Image (cartoon, rainbow, N blue to C red; front, top):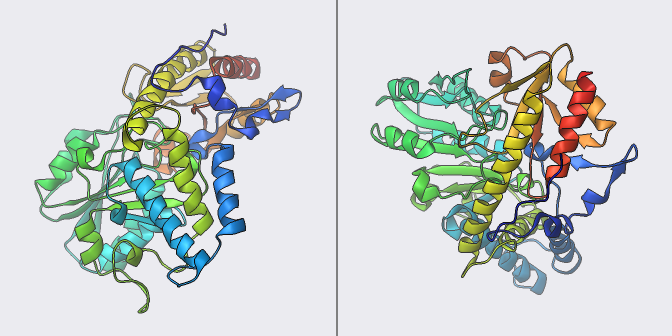
Length: 414
């Protein structure tokens, strides 16, 4: 069933990419491990670890002092802002770092909420990871706001855009929407949602954590005011990234200690940051850019993401059709012909998701199980208790690994 990888002029061959990841040499139970857990966190190439190690061993210091390693740290953080700005299509002074997307979202919520009160509304979606739902619900409880949730369609996993249009109003202060579902792989029409929000003067916050590894982020094209992502989902360390329009980052009443910087984006970064992680975040962007060609980093990223998306589409089609042919397997979310990420979620009749994952683990196949913090999605699909099985393709996934997974699920079903 295995076939050679389809060539692509836009991105490096998959075997060349795989050579950069030591984790892919791991063996378990007599099998080479195939990592399908990328939606929960990808593996890391040598170049990212090298840059993080170099920083810690040779440049480690705190910021804003007049000695060598501190000056070098300031320069490294600016370099990282430039890299992540290229990654999202923004400006270096619109990039703030934090522990993770969830922490940044809670922090942004506290900031925005200082100007909101009873009568104001926030709109979220049922399709989202709860990191883009519960921070806003918490803010609503604290400030006396109301929260409206936009449903998704069970048959195809798509957000109900008509319902979104109906719920937005002059009372809506913020629309919090995911660019892509980490559970179903659905890619939302964020640009359309943002246009609808702007008609009511509503701010737009985009969770791009699952979207960013699979498509070129363009904050201008999306039309959003804030966007967050996490570098550990695209081959980097555990670091969160917040992009915000500079005028907003400079004007908002952000909670901060008095001596902390007043200028954006540093005013959004509480305490001493994870400097080595931020260096690694920049290295992750450079790793992706190195997989393609172009006149500058942004152009290379565009070509790479286009090539990886096409490659992921082919893998998704293969995985979807193979799993769908197995008796007892039920697939959820958009079909492979739809605009989606290479993330496939399914259940196996009569078996809890954890049991399926354990069986596949014995075959050297690493998949995620449970609700993936997309708790509302799992509940609405009727699997809030037993959970779902999720398999995600990354830049290092091969057709042979997809075939192994299909065969493993078939064996588990038998």
